[in-house]
Length: 93
Image (cartoon, rainbow, N blue to C red; front, side, top):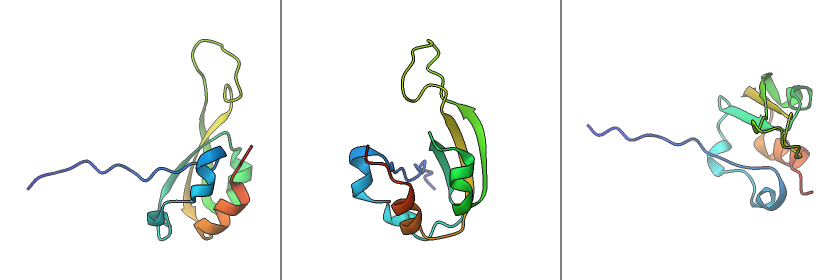
């Protein structure tokens, strides 16, 4: 038997990647684990059974940029469709 690593599906709801939509494999992934960057847990809570902040972005050099200090949140237990989440949370700016 040959074991092959399985890479998780990756999607981004910001800028040029957002119009591409979510991966089709996410459609039935109610038990998927989501790692979200720059979203507050309270923003994601209506869409998931559990969301908690696990860290903050830190570039390690004190360089101030738009991501520095932003939350890194882990969510599980999708409560709605990915289409609904995608439309309400995607960012094009």
